[in-house]
Image 1 (cartoon, rainbow, N blue to C red):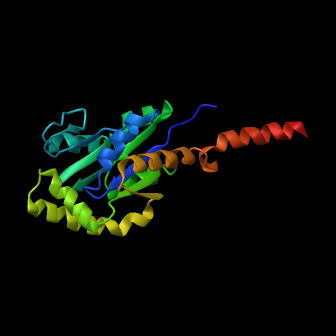
Image 2 (cartoon, rainbow, N blue to C red):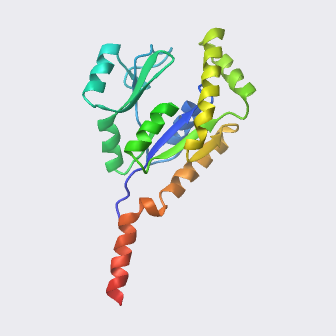
Image 3 (tube, rainbow, N blue to C red):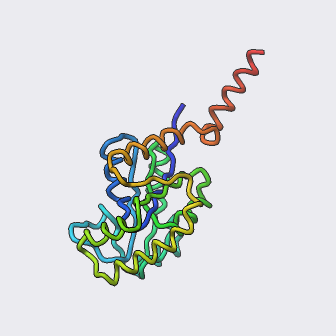
Length: 207
């Protein structure tokens, strides 16, 4: 039985460590593919076009929207973010579990198109720890950090829409939990309809 990949949506507050978590998951376990998002924000130090993101001009991004070339897109802190469609669907067909690291409003749009997507929300152990991690980045002004904390307060209202929460306190434990959730998701009846029907057909033939 060929296994179809699961679309895994990972969201979380800015600074919760979702990027580090996803990177470790892909390093430690086989079968995952990370969808590279497109964005209009400026690259951070060390980021490369086509690796962390596809960095686009606003006009390029809006052309992709018009051509239906994105699964979802959203505007966050004055920049566009979106998920290119073709890459994701090819990886799923190849049996890979594709991870989308996207914001909450985009995640809910994707869920409407891909009803069997798995939604995971990464949380810090506390709001105090979240602020500490944002400050620790050393890449943003106090004003931007305050803006991200306010945004987190808004996003906290939508967490119930997700299938699971994962608290990123101990990184290694969090990675293990995340992989176990995905493994279990592969065995739900709604993701194995064809297999179940085949067994039923075979059982009918045994009568």
